[in-house]
Image 1: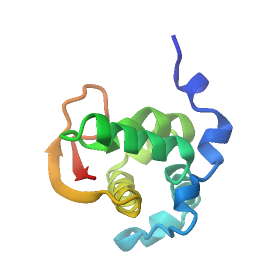
Image 2 (image 1 turned 135 degrees about the vertical axis):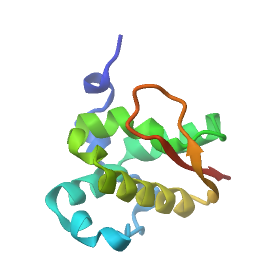
Image 3 (image 1 turned 90 degrees about the vertical axis):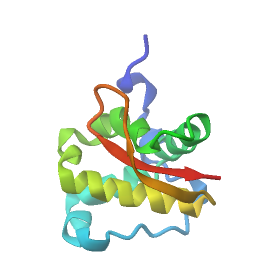
Image 4 (image 1 turned 60 degrees about the horizontal axis):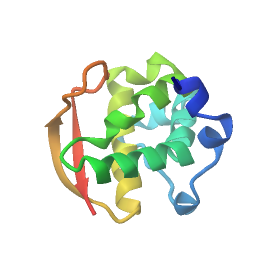
Length: 129
């Protein structure tokens, strides 16, 4: 059975998705966090081919569920548990929205409960294409 170590290659986690080449992710109220070493690593992983494909696929396949859930294992593998602290989760949510809107999705609703067990996210936003 595949696991995160075999699915997420170093290349997939470090190669920026070409559709995001002109996207500069904004940190908003989390500037210090976003500019920290782990915040910069989070930004890089969020723009990776693996993360982008995961977000897009999950939103297309399950449009009524927050796509942020699809990143749980990927982020754990790439950055560890620290990225699931409350402010990091909020920053990740900001990045998800910017990425999906850049890819022509539009925000539909926030505060959608996450029903997947074992994920660090309790709720998230959903988007429509």
